[in-house]
Image (cartoon, rainbow, N blue to C red):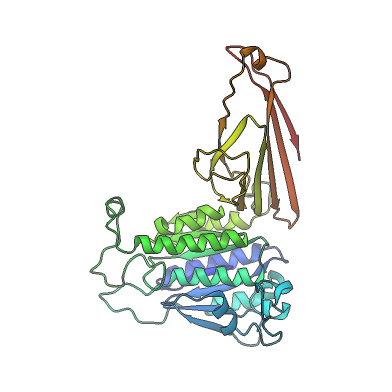
Length: 393
């Protein structure tokens, strides 16, 4: 799902449109693609209506719930709304025809997408001299998350957000439109004197929770000389294992090369995978205190969980919405104290083990399970340590 900021200058708009056209050409033919543009208003483009460009427009200053989104975008014209239950995907109340209006395979909508990008213009709403451009980044991301949650729940999906300035409108705003109000600085955050910060973080924390529940990733491409609100947005990117690319312009080589690497499928690609679950099994004399890294707790409590929490603890399983070849996790364990003599520690049967299970959706669409098992012995004193590795791929 491409989420594109149009409240940028014409030169930046041309750079961004060129980069997006190249990215669309790199997409696998069977990838489902959607497009949302935003400025003062949020425009959801109906790619399945190929006759003329057709969009659904939402007010940027108001948060739109999933139910309101489905009603206003006429998802229940063909198939009536189910009286009860969760509405998510073709199996749970939505017709495949309704979903295909907004998410189409790249091979079917490449022409429509390129046509929309060619005609895409800077946000037409005038900006007074003493004000910032109206930009409703939070509302656009919320609508993108709700649309993916309704159409492809539990399946690997990524929101690619291209933002060229600070959010000034609606939920998630980091500064007001008036130029007389400066954007919060690092000192303001340290002193807790940023007026919009806590409200924006609370909004993005809720968005992160929604994306984790759906198994979807948020990637942020922030290209601007001004701040765009990464401090507030980062919680949603970190929890979902997304990417952040910072550059001065959409014409900068850092942005263009990074965007190409996301879609490139060669020997040196990123190896992007999605919708993963990371789980730990270990022997009884070890407990899990927590984990540090791009994941979110699945709250799987049990005897393996330590009372001491470091990072994301009180669980032995975590959701990893996005992962790649370089994804790193730091696990913290606690050794359970046993009042036993050293002779017992040195016995041949005194082993402990770890087992890491990673279940994920590969970039090819396959679901894979990778199991890594390690075993070693407890050693009292300066004796040698025996280590055995067992990898099951």
